[in-house]
Image (tube, rainbow, N blue to C red; front, top):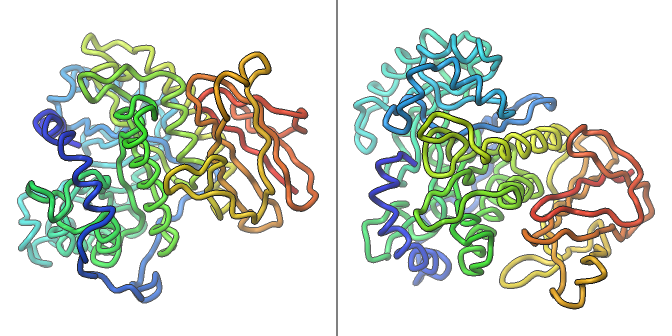
Length: 449
């Protein structure tokens, strides 16, 4: 996600995205390069655990890369204060010298930029990685406010063995800290595309599986900007890539008992993209929550096109939108931390999207406003189902997939139960109206006893 890479690669990337995605969808007999019988136990995985009263929302912004913002280094304390005011729970990715400024801004959890130094990520040795990590974490390993260390963004699979050494070294020299690695989306190029492969695997599934088995991470993080690139899901082909990645990362993470983080767009990354709006940003946050994502990242915060801050170092309308969406995400995320995601389905399961498995709901009752419902087609929602980890309570999140119109919704339960709807601002629950309105791109969380 580095800015120079983004600027240089985007013109080519979008011409190749769908070729690569189609190849990943149906390659010609790709080899199985991972152990299909591996489990979390056989791999010795140690998943990241965070408190239930903490939901992680962060700006994906390498603030040590000064070319992204000429203003950041002028006043780091001001920069981090603006992140805190925008309801982020973690700043990222900060330099060690800026840790005091982050704490002054009120953050008590942060991700520190460590990088990989001059180590050859294909041929590096365990001794080299061990010595590098030991030196880089020495001054922060005992700091309770340091959540972990940024290592690398979007590595190809050839780097996985050495990155596994980094993860092991962080566990060794900074026990309890996170080794942060972020992965490509599926529209990065694969083996067989007519370009140098970015993922260096035949499929996205192979990429994810090999990452887990060779790196042995504490969580899975990936980025996908197809909500923006599809112009709010109006381009169905690009929208399908967003859904496929969301469901596949969720599947692999659940298979190995790992948390997973979704990174989405809070700016106009492409020159011809429309600016972010409330519906777009809400849709990205609420679909992540409904799928069971354990953290949400926004690309990015400082000084680019229609982002939360501008080149004049002022907050923008996007900043205000992001603040409101962040507050809702954190409020609902803390509640969902008490649950585990059991199902994701769609009321209108077009393409390869799953329909209602029938475990919890017979269905959902949806409608547009009476005056327009005969003119605009059938309303549709994404449905996330959850079960409490330590109680019999269940939860359902409905996400309005129409980014232009509000809908009304109610649940049709298979078994009788008491339903409450959660206020996404306060987190309090109350008895629902006969039909609840869901704003465009937003969601509603229902608790069921």
